[in-house]
Image (spheres, rainbow, N blue to C red):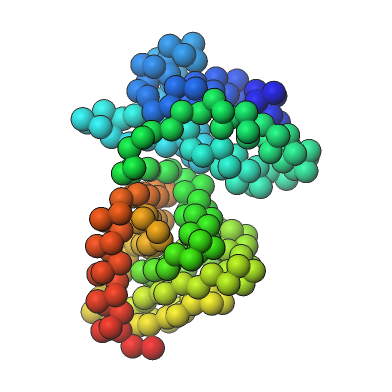
Length: 247
């Protein structure tokens, strides 16, 4: 059932085999993936790169070695939303498959993680995770930039994020440098720092996570750090600057 659902998403045979290997093995190296998925070692990196661009896989580095893992199965729905053909049928199929995937998927016991996403899925995942954290009562903090890359590259995703903010009454606290652009966030507390401050990369803090979204890199790179102490440090830094900023 899982394989059939993944086929409806449009994944290739190699992508399906590697993804299934990831959910069954949990955090693993390319050696384990190659053996489990029965795929040539020369192809595994290429397939993993495609899965990461689709937001279905990520990696962390331990002892200078990359360890790969499948992202939460709910991200299959995020990927599905980008596909226009037969979307209702495919969504139903994937939702039915998620419980089975959760039963098979092994998760890391390590509470501190750093996940790297390549491509457009990463920035969208950050928006969704922030809404989820806000619905749980977590404060949301963000360092903005004078330009609006979300509006330029992900207009549908940012529009949905604004709708979710209104729907769930989720409010951001945002810092910008004084410039020509202002946030369109409907429920945001916004303050401005002097032009001397440099905020070149979007940084968002929610719950125990710090998300850094770099739209300047090609492909776009999103780094999500899940660490209570790091998140606390970023929040303290944000609050210090908040006191210096002006409305």
